[in-house]
Amino acid sequence: MATAIAPQLESKGRAARAAAPALARTPSGVKDRALLSVADALEAQADRIIEANARDLEAGREGGLSSALMDRLLLDVKRIGGMAAGVREIAALPDPVGQEIERHTRPDGLVVTRRRTPLGVVGVIYESRPNVTVDIAALCFKAGDPCILRGGKEAIHSNTVLAAIIRDAIAAAGGPAEAVQVVEDTDRALVLQMLGMTEYIDLIVPRGSSSLVNFVAENAQMPAITGGIGVCHTYVDAAAETETAVAVTTNAKVRRPSVCNALDTVLVHSQAAPRVLPLLAGTLSEAGVEMRCDRRSATLLASRPGANVVPAAEDDFGQEFLDLICSVKVVDSMDEALEHIARYGSGHSEAIITEDAEAAERFLDEVDAAAVFVNASTGFNDGFEFGLGAELAISTNKFHARGPMGLRELTSYKWVVLGKGHTRP
Image 1 (cartoon, rainbow, N blue to C red):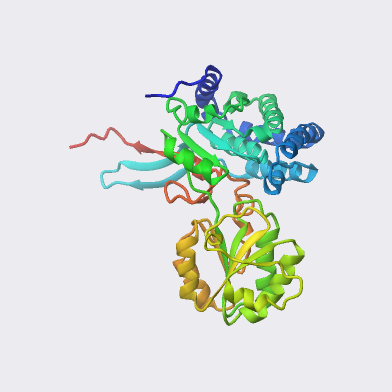
Image 2: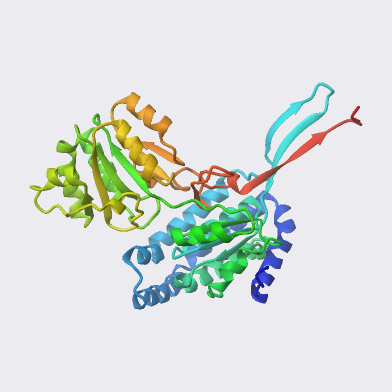
């Protein structure tokens, strides 16, 4: 039996669907001008955004939100500037709509081509991070896809103000503001209703906790991108350079521990462990990281002053911590490291630290993940860092997109066939 849709939600679905033709025919110049207007407005109205965000932060403190969620929720001048920079980078990227993907001419002279087209209306259900409102609205607008955004109650004031700024800026630049729809009602029942809106939504994307992702996977009646849970490993190989191993691993864990590309587990080859682990424990402990160590790594660190070490439980491996916690294990071979990642990884971001080119190449070839890194932090698995401006999500799916989803991943294509009176025999 179909779930009834609340009138206010259905009206947003109708508005988004109605905006699709107008957005699809909006010239690239108008789309880019609108996005630049959005970026300028975000910076010009930073005080307004921060004031709304302060209300969300206060409610979060009163509600007992974790430090990780509070970090995701926070907006300040620097983060607003980062959002604006991302929007400007999206504006500077080539418009994918209408791009010709391929062309070939058949023996009879028939010309067969494929061209990129908008994907359709994109629905996104997300938690905590109000910057997602800006990233997704900008990406979808440039790709020609109207969007319906449903953020969590913890960011409702921030999201409402950001949406108003975005829509006003688009309208001022002559674009279709109705292409950006934001659900202001925080009733959780609306989430299930959105998952049944097949008449209005072509693709649904959850961004948030594993419980949200799993709920969407189980209940969505339209195609969904339901990956994105990050259980991320860094493997320190026997041939790792010590300073590189410590610096990269520490950055992957402490830069922003609340995000999905943050490191969760460190695997250290037994030949590298005696020289790497004590130094790594020092930098991680200084940053307040709790290291949940297997027996061998705990033994190596037993005499390390100030090391924040506790024994690891079995479920500390395969855990997405989203906090200043990581698990640590000593392995005896690349094979053991690969087996561990295959068992516990989520297919998100995996890294190797090594000076051995053959070991690096083997790791790249054999690890099954959306992004694999050599001597670089998993924190780089990000649409902005990959030159996409931002991302709709980081997909761990293999169809239809994998890794950071940018403009091209927000398009479909159509076959275009050019003839000269051709008839088929």
